[in-house]
Image (tube, rainbow, N blue to C red; front, side, top):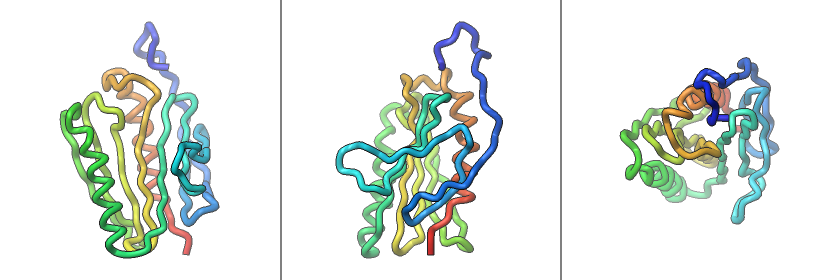
Length: 170
């Protein structure tokens, strides 16, 4: 996808979204050009998913946890911060943004990781008591920001829709 003789050869699909019901304790909207697959990695659970963008050669990995105590929630949030800041070696900047939708009980932190890093976007969402979801965007390409920037910016808009439409099942 990114290895073209012409830098303008990337054909980005039209933005259209559909509801996704996870069968777990959360739902959100995904683009029609994406699919959700169960994560088949070792040490996962049924609520770990990958939002896959086949035509864009990328995926958003989702890790869901049921939270049993405030201490466990704090540990999960700290782990998300550590995972984002592991990219410090290659990152030119790491910016944090607050995710705050109290009417839906959706709170979190959004990490924008600048530079030639394996993951340019990571975030977590929680209801601050029982549910926690961490997400990280990856491309199946060498992390060369100049090459992936158009697609990265395109998918960031999908991530915004994901976050704004995200809901915990009550």
